[in-house]
Image 1: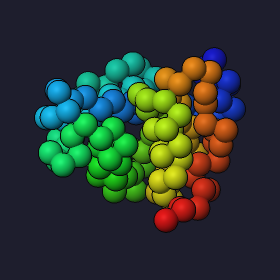
Image 2: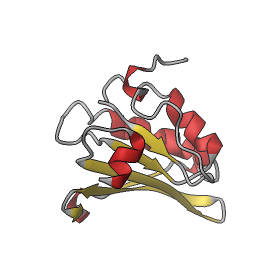
Image 3: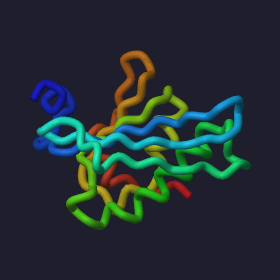
Length: 130
């Protein structure tokens, strides 16, 4: 309840966390870890292979993974309430620019010190900037 309350969210049933990993700017993958009120849902974890031309490009890799995942968010059982991004302000700003029309209210948090998206629960209403 503390995280839900601090973000001003009514419900927090599902969390998806994303991280981009690469080996020497090559062989990049994006991982998606899923949590529910019961804890880690290991059967829902996802691994996205990143094309070689995006390896070493965290923003491009994050975009590739999230755009692949967004198409499944039309299913209410798949949509997360909270999206966690391993990154800093740059990654979080990028995520806030994506089209969230398929998502319900959502907050994004990065590992940037004391930085939470100022749009906490309004990202679903954000208009795409492209």
